[in-house]
Length: 639
Image 1 (cartoon, rainbow, N blue to C red):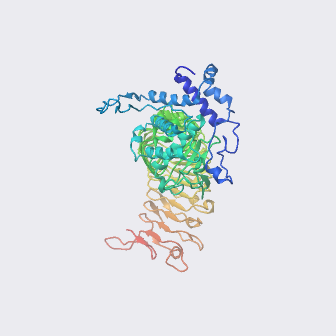
Image 2: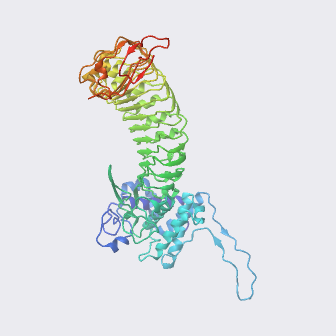
């Protein structure tokens, strides 16, 4: 082939090569092509030295023609020497990234002691050097060239000059494989791509403290160790140990049939350090999971190179810097992402409008970070999203009405932010909602009566906001509702009697509002058999305590303090309040004597009950006289 290849031709050809490596249909078993399937052989020697050869010619023609092989380029591609192609591709990519590679002038010749001898130093060049693959002595040179080209693409060329860097350590380690019993192949086109990934895995091992990993560690990088340990002489697809836990089993490292890294699951593995940019060489990877570790630094922008990436989970680390970077979350960023989990880190930045391009996203989690700005209206384009978790950030602005488009949303949690404005009516059109947690913001306005249409709802927390208006009676339609938190708002009106039809309810808190009227008797009894917590304190409730207040079979906490209640504390029947632990009736206008039936459920009696906190207005007034309530078993008395 003569002449210089055009950059377009190079990209088309390398695309065809990558496609053949990824989607080959006719890959054989054993040690050729598809020999990297996860299975065990009886021949340990064969297993240790398994290598990929040329990928099968069975390329998915539809995919290839769609992405890489326009018909006009076919004739030109047929003439391309793939070894020269990859070399020239590396050079072209280097130039494209504005890296300048020029011949360094030779040093000034030294004095020559003899006219027949020259001591002129050889010229030095940073340009990769094409070498003859038929010469067995060129293995190290070609590997160095390839690693240098990878470093240019990943932006880590300077790290190669630092002998302590993960890149330098990985380079030195892989160069040793030129002297292996079956040496590494630096020339076959299909193998070059796998060499890059082997190098990339080595960089991750050195960069993330691999010698101290809980699983997969190989201190000293012993190449003779078996499968399940990294940095061995085996094909890297054998490095991933199978791990069994409470959630089932998984492999640390999984390859596709062509030997490309498909999944990395390094969760809870004592990983310490920065995720290296070389993660970008795993062009076929669909899943990277590394939660519960000690990864630090910023996310590498080279994530944008991993176009098939579907799951990225780095929760519970010490990562920092911008969370949504344009290289992977911008106009030309990732499009296949389904699960993006980055909670419990130290990320900053804003949610970009381009997030609307993540239309396949099902889980978007970045809770407990330092994200600022507003929720863009484009969030409404994430129509596949089931869980949107961004609690404990600094997000301001309103909840956009476009969130009503998320008809698969089951869980939203934006607790502890700076959200203002009202809950848009469109929000309640997400009928698949099961958990709504909006507490600790500055949300105002009222709760729409259409909340009663969310018949799958089991958690509704909107406490510690500025919500006003009345409590919708349509809450009574929610047969699956288990937890209702409305406390610390500006709610007025009465407690709906329809609360008595919420058969699954476990927790009700309407404390610290401005509610009036009587306590509905419907809140007590076997119709709410699962109710354990009932907080009605700090309102303006009046009337008497319902006579049936002891008939809730599982009631644990009953707080009625700081209201305008009158009358006496009703007696209870034998067998009632068996699980009651806290009873607060102080700061009311209740009078009389606490009946012995209530004192018998104290936890200091025989046989006794569970009641350990009992507050009442049983303290005599400062100017003398009788206390408002006579109580022989209260744990704290108030005036």
